[in-house]
Amino acid sequence: MAGEGEAKSLEETPTWAVATVCFFLILISIFIEQLLHLLAKYFNKKRRKYLIQALYKIKTELMLLGFISLLLTVLEKPVANICIPKSAGETFLPCGGVDSSDWSEEEAKCAEQGKASLLSREGMKQLQYLIFVLASFHCVSSIFTFGLGMAKMRRWESWEAETRTLDYQFSTDPRRFQLSHQTSFGKRHLRYWNENSVLRWPACFLGQFYGSVSKVDYLTLRHGFIMAHFDQDNSFDFQKYIRRALDKDFGVLVGISFWIWMFSISFIFFNAHKFYSYYWLPFIPLVMLLLVGTKLQAIITLMCLDSHDKSLVVEGTILVRPSDHFFWFGRPKLLLHLIHFILFQNSFQLAFFTWTWYKFGFRSCFHRRTEDIVITLVTGLLVHFLCGYVTLPLYALVTQMGSSMRTAVFTENVVEGLKRWRAKARKNLKISYSARPSLDASVDTSLSLDSSPSFSLSASYSIDPNPPLDRDHVTIEVIDEAKHNDEQPREHKKNGSFEGFNVSNAAPAMEKQSGL
Image (cartoon, rainbow, N blue to C red; front, top):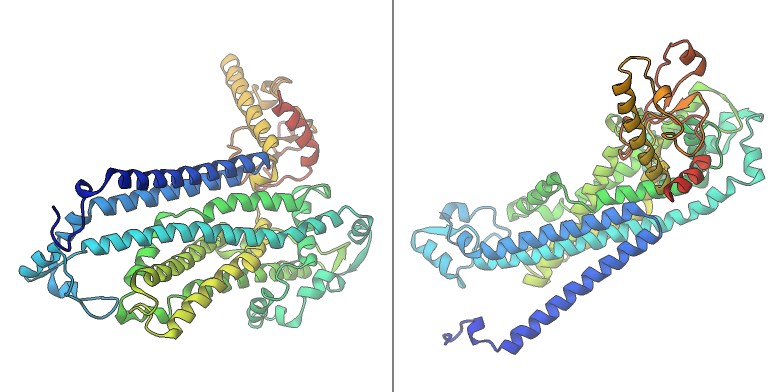
């Protein structure tokens, strides 16, 4: 029999009570599993395979956090039995004092030795709650931010449809000449404060809140992207390409990498009372988000200034030139990792606030004053709203203006068709080289009609079958036919260049091949 004040074990608990609790736990687990399965079927029906990969990553992260929670349960007693010096146990306390009125058995044993327990069993249980709340907040906040960004980008569909009208084709007719500062894009960005390197950053900081992605910015960047990669192919659906690219980036946002975990541990460490973290920790994600938004807005302005410096007179409209040198360290993907860090840290702070509220009350030592609560909640909600409605759509548009073009430019059927063709081409190459191990066994000899894709390309264009097509960026090699006949190879085009390659003509043929 259990003593007075002690909790009953399963030996003294009715079996029907244990079975009832297990039944409801299993029922909830099956419901969540079926819900994720239905989401996967829905994304598969909509042909959004990158969201399926993101959903799989969410399930993996939930399994990882569940395994951490299981380890905390198993290691409750061994960790509590670890004794550390009492002086070390009284440092970096979140509340500035130690309450010894309700010590556990392990803590009492360490106190008899003049030491303190590393982490009590009650502390391990409370940490399990924090892990659960963190997993819930991270998934919900990521989905909320992504959904808010997609809702704002819904208006881009009408802008994309406008590019197929006669009015747009007339306005971008290369036979119409005008000064760059007379164009709509030039009037928006060629201002005297933008031309000044000191005043440009404050102007871009304010610009992200006032029409961060305007119609003229979208159409101009779309025109520059197509002219750099498709050679005036106006039939390319730029909005759907951005959506596919953002679906793939969402898989990064919902993940939790090693360095993100390290920053989270640092957040827990700096919650000690002596650091006064409630005054400055909530502002770190907000400041970083505003800095990223300012940089994205500055990239659009710099592209406009660069085009203006190279040509004062434009044909039709300003032609912006995509380049990696506009981004920090020449890496457009760095902005995605910063947004990932911002979202996770902000979710962690909101989860930590909710956990302390649930376990220790609204007026605990973690939040002594009303100002602490207001700062935490306001900054947390503001970061999620700004990230979803302002920064994420701005990132989705500007990050496409790098030097390379991403594999999301192809539809799923085209990618699968290219992969099958590449596999067949490489197989034929091996057969050809084994039969004629000479330099004459070129790609033109090995790629017969059986190994060529079902869509037609001109003789001056060839796709290199060797590099993998599932990378984030692709490369297409353009060869001058005349020089090729003279056995003088031309210099490779820059990574990601698709000049003259018509994807709209290739897609139906590849879809037909996919059905074979």
